[in-house]
Length: 278
Image (cartoon, rainbow, N blue to C red):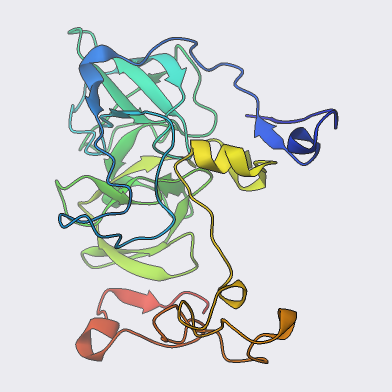
């Protein structure tokens, strides 16, 4: 998936760096695989804003993605690659011989017409899009959509361009290097999908204007130093000088750079071999 630069005919497109949707199906999503989404606007059941900077945005339908990949030993054919407004990567519509259709995360290199399989057997080919237990995946292989609990479905490495790597196997666990750099123990009977998640250029996208962020449901973020003292600890003062150079804090006074907030046993995890680079 390439990115497109525009002629700077307006301020909005001068800095825009947007994806080209070549190969994406120009149709509505599969009707049997979508659900409606209720937007909260960042408000809780009392109507109070509990998460700021959320609201508006275009209407969306949620695509029901098969993270479990539990239709075993049946080859499915990729019928289409589709845009999903709810995630950074693309989704692939897979059709099985019995007529059933499912959405799966589209890995890098997957094309319309390709066949993908899920299996619990060692004989399955290690090919992009295939899903199998970590036990049978060779060391050094890039994987995504990794289960942490067998049967729960993939929870790790699911966003655009992400991939984890199996570095070792020991006893009942595999050492998996996650995209963050953390090395974690995951049971060998957990499933993972071969390959890297597609749409790797997503990190280079630039919206170009504030309006495009509003289309995504993201409201503006105002600097604390631009507020009044009653609204933010950084507010007030004369001109741009504000309150001098205070340690950055949240609107509620909690330090927001470097403060560790995890306490006690919750911070340690027996499944973490090497922590990510802080």
